Length: 585
Image (tube, rainbow, N blue to C red; front, side, top):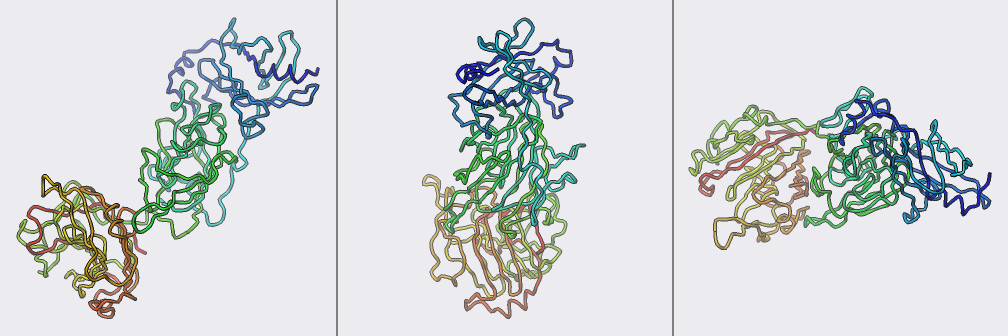
């Protein structure tokens, strides 16, 4: 039987839905807990079989009318229905929310019903059966099980496979299930810059939860910017729902499939760019396809997501999958780095400090210009150094027992204001080395290179000075910088203004030092921002003798930290070092 388009559309806009009610078992009543969840269809119960998507194609006198329906389980045998004229989201619906049909069920005579004075809908044997109130069957329409066109896509050549079902070892906190799926609450050991990402995820079935309490998680690119993961099947599609850029932008269309369906994110990401003032000059940008449909197209990310594990900055960052207390599953996760050199792996680093002892370290074995060695101990998980005894002028260095050639070192430092210290690479037992200055005092410098015991050459273009509280001249509240009287040879350096922006006052700062070659090329970073480059092959300063330095220091040496000798070190002041790790190159 054919209906007029006017009547059929009216019918579809006020659909009624019914199925036989059932008595709840004790086990099913326990599932009324708002936090109850199922991760398999077997455990999901009868309501899950009804929930899902249906696609209606009704023949009318004016042609075929297409209508998409999403039926969402609300627990305890209750459902919510959303009807989409033209078809399902991403497959025919034009995105006009004003035309949607939304109905809640109620129980009438033991049957769960969507009330209407136009029609009745029953779901029987997986079919959506529409009949008019006078018993005329309009049609039977099957449940549809959409799949993403990128589901099961294999990684291209050169991709970094983070998870393929064989091991969870590429993630910190990684746990693999019996089904060879990955659980939430993980951070990749590898860190990335510009990249593309493919991942597949499955939401748990949590019918009694509402809003953010339904299978909540999130995927953070570089550990900074979240693409929300949530059971928002049938919802409006806000920025805190599935596919949303949290607190930044709603998805263009809500492409969330029903829970327990495998879904895909395909992401193209360009990291933020920073200048040598430490200023962000270009926001990070992201394109996201959810289940094959573009929901964000080259969108700027002006800020990091609240609660992110990595603050905004120019350094590389991991793929982080949030644990919000709800179970989810992940599989087929891989990344393509746009620049293969912009990949770092935490597992390539070895720890030089166990956080409890000075095992693997020794003081300078004989007296040097700075003293007999200084006083070193472990306090609250950090190596602390001061003069021995405090304020005596007797300093020295603490060196690794092992020597290192080409390498990259990462560590945290927290010096008291007024100390004169340094971080040494290619050091001899006498402290002759290439030093990253930690001269944390007026007319000092932190982050540039100094030739300790090798001629006194240096790369510092500016000095730092403290800014003090006007009511307490001993209280440091900030910094300013001034250019040095004689500029060093031209090389990459952060500006003084940039250094002031990135250094964290009265806090731990993360330092990275890379040394390669002989003559050595040394690069330093603080809190992810590049500070300085020293090229021993081309550096041109009267104090620098390339041949002498290269022969003296050679291709490998100790890593060391310093307590400066002399009377400038404040009594009781300390320099602190922790999380010291090295990667051989």
